[in-house]
Length: 364
Image 1 (spheres, helix red, strand yellow):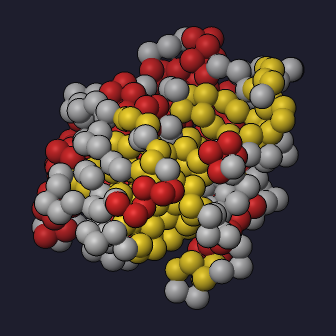
Image 2 (cartoon, rainbow, N blue to C red):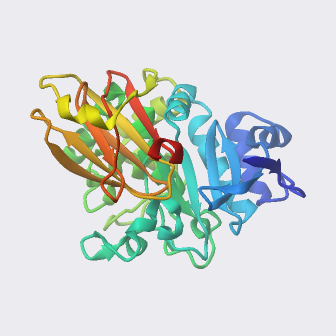
């Protein structure tokens, strides 16, 4: 894939000047130093996955978008990711090792125009709502958010301009950037805060993941859903610190880098040939682990767990260009097939996070 910097890009002229200045001040940089941190937008030729024609890397995390998405949107997403990760290099390192990315939905695109969501176009996603109706951004190892939300365009469905980019990337951080002990602290604080009567009627009260994602928006200067709270809360960290000081302190420890996650170890799992299915069994009573499946082909791939008797149990499809993170156990075997039933191989997890990259070469 050939790449080249986009021409005519000016760091301080491509977005509102105050945003560049705020980013610089938060990191203790001059505005020109901020530009150097931001890097250059690259044009991808041919486009990645046949779709993503622009890339801007922030803290080692690629921000990808279609050619039609404005440079300003990539720059704004990169600015926000940089603010989230710049003081927490251990979190950034874990995300880099696992292959985290931020994908932008163009203002004139549907969510399901993105390659990883295409197989969900027109299908029920949450209740009767489709993925396009439900949201303009999702979490996961490859998170997403929308151009109109980043740039506060009139077409943004969130008239209060809540920060969907940081919200969704906070889900990515919690699931993939933190270690289990960090997540346990978030879960404990969620219970303590809600049991104390805070966050009633607000989206933050849904579960620990939404708690962390919603509070992240306040921590970095905007605000999340505030339900029926009266008077309406002010945006920003000052209100968060006054309303829920213990939760604020936990977020500050994480985002400042004082509370560090353990490093994530990632291994590329060895492929076993299809004929190994006849003798492969999952073993009980094994330690928990995670396997990440990345489908780099143009076809959906179905994944099956081979149970303790070696029988297949379907765990759904990894869409073309998509990704699936599977909680599993050491020695629990996973088999992948094409839509025509052809077996691509079998992979057996180890204690480290396992990665399985499905390519056209592997599928032949």
